[in-house]
Length: 223
Image 1: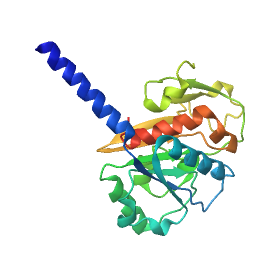
Image 2 (image 1 turned 180 degrees about the vertical axis):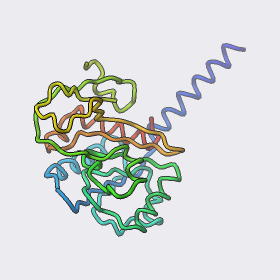
Image 3 (image 1 turned 30 degrees about the vertical axis):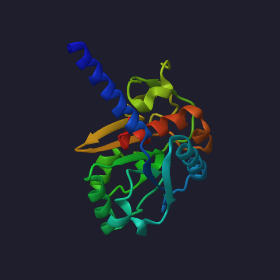
Image 4 (image 1 turned 180 degrees about the horizontal axis):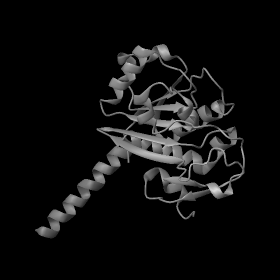
């Protein structure tokens, strides 16, 4: 009887996991900019559209902050900030987004999500950090410290992620420990940030694409 009970328990876990992975989720991609505009945004939107088809998401993309109403937001499981910059939401829209996240929804910040809403402390905590500065593009070494998180599966076998600052050319903005990817669980909500996405080519990289796809599924509690 004990073996049968254990088997049934394991089967139930498998069924629930399969259901979570197969459930359709509604994803909102927001890419409004009032500061620097990355030319990678269109490439990122194309990547998100491809991911939606592959992963059975219902995708909505907009730069219209007026849509950040309680009625509109409540239809989504996750919101992705795709390279937004500077001030993108007014006070009421910020309040609406805070209330939306408090209901246990998910957030993914991509690259310039950290160059956005510097005067909004709640957002800084949700995203996890703000840009200190943005150095010129250069070659550096990335250290993959932990590949156990679902979003890090694409990087398994490669040496939450940080930068080896000894490989950088400019000392002005070094910060010793330099994380590039992180996740948070805030109450019933999940938040994720990745630095990838500065260039169009980043969104065309299969590993980055899978990485972001897994991150969205994670914040939406599909994995």
